[in-house]
Length: 209
Image (cartoon, rainbow, N blue to C red):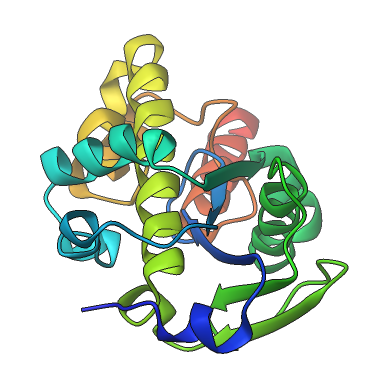
């Protein structure tokens, strides 16, 4: 379970940052930044974990509570599918993280990032591999980012119901891939991703024929 040791080692305002959505075939990549300026209540610390380990109902409950915790600051950033296609998913993920930190209502003294690469945040920063399972701030950020992105994909699913985005969040499940073959590519698909790109090339070939 994550704890607050990394934050306490640095002192000052420490932001945990994580992103969600590198792998899907559709939708934006979302990042969140969370600062616990007054620490984490024990009962909340007991349930915060890497978002991938939590059930949706628990993620939602934590995300709903976080803004009401004393001393908490939250920033959310995104990079669109167009930006992902233009600058690639790696750089788009870093852009989303930078935007999340920039949108915090407070300027952090230090940033903890899940992973092994550090974007330029304009302050000191540290990359922690597996950070969403080690740092409460990063874990909280992973939960916020996941909840926000899932809500976005659920809204997109209303307009584009064939792809199953409400359930698969844009990942390349069998339902999603089948819809790509039968319905085609939407404006929300990442056109530089192999599965989507191949389908577009296939459609172009059929059109010429």
